Length: 461
Image (cartoon, rainbow, N blue to C red; front, side, top):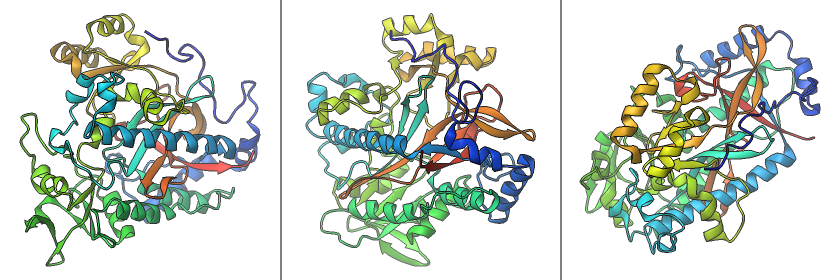
C-alpha cells in the first residue's frame, strides 16, 4: 500500500513562508487587514442584510471568513488545465460505462467497482444523452510538498457555487484591498450555455427548470438564486407530470413542456436496489431514456462520483486521453478487498474512512480525530458491508490565516473549483471557493459539519 504524500510533514502554509514572513503575494493584504474582529462583524452583517442564507450554519448565515485565499495566476492556470483534463476523462468514462465499456473490457477499471456502485444506473445502458457530465466540482488539497491533489470528484450535485458572487461582493465592500476584476456572476451565463448544449437533439432553445426540494429545504437560498439567475423556474417533483412521453411542469398555474432539468434534489437515484424507479426516476428516467429530456448531470453519471471509482481517475486520463494526469488523485483503497482491508486496519490513524456513495461529508471518519463511539460505529458498519467503504490516505491539508476568536489563526483548507463541459469545451467558473475547518487542528472542512468558506482571489506574482 502506497504511503501518504508527505503524511508526516508539517502542513503547507498558504500565506507565510517557513521562516514566518508573509509570502510576497500576501504581504500587502495582511498588512491592510486592520481590526479583524470588526471585519468579521461587518462581513456577517452584510451577508445577513443581503439574506445570504446557508441552512447548515448555526445562525443560518453563510460562514464567510474575511481573509480571502490568494492563488498566483501561474498556479491557477496550471490548475485550470488539470481540471479540464480530469473533467474530459470523467465524461468519457461515464459515456463508456453506459456504452461500449472499453475501459472495463481492458481491465483498467474493475467491472465490479462499477456494477456494484450505488450510483450505477443499468437502465441507462445504450442511452446517448447530449451530455453526460455538464458540471463538476472538484475537491482539491494542497499537500505539504506544495502540490495539489484531488480528494473527491463531485459530479452528482456540486453545490456552493451560488455563494461565489455574494462572497466576492461582501469582501469587496469591507476589505481595504481590491479584489480581482473578474465577475463571479458571469458563471450563470456559462451555466446557461452548458445546460442549453446538454439539451436533446434538435432543440435549439430549450425550456429549462431547476428541480429542487422547495422553500422548506436548507439549500433553498442557493436553489432559488440559481433559478432566478438562469431565468428558469424552480420546481419540485409535485409540479411534474407527463404528456405524450414529454416531461411537463406546472409553473404559475400553467403546464409547460420541459427540455432540460437541472437536478438539485436530495434523492439523486433513478432506480432503487431492486431496479425499480424511485419517485425521481418515475418523473425523469423515461423521458431521459427516450432522449426527449436532458437531466444535468445525466442519470447514472454519479458512477464517476463514487469514492472507489475515484481511485481510478488517473488511469482514466491515461486510457481516454493518452496523457499523464496533471492533477493526481489522493490514493484510495477498496475495503471490500480482503488484502487491502487487512492492511488498512493496521494503519487507521493514517487514513480517512468514507462511505462510497455519500456526499457532503456524511459518514466520513477521520480516524485520528474520531471519538470512541464514532470509531466503534464505523468498524461495525465496515464489518457488516466492507464493500460499501473506502479508505483514503490522510494528508495534512494546507493552512490559511482565518479569523478565530478575534485574531488570525491557521486553519486547514481545501479548494473547491467548479467546471462546466459544453460544446465549447471545458470552462472553469472563476476560482471557486475554499472551504475552511474552523476548529483548531481539525481537517473537517465540510460546510455541513461546521466548516466555513473563503473567497479565492487570483493575483499576479
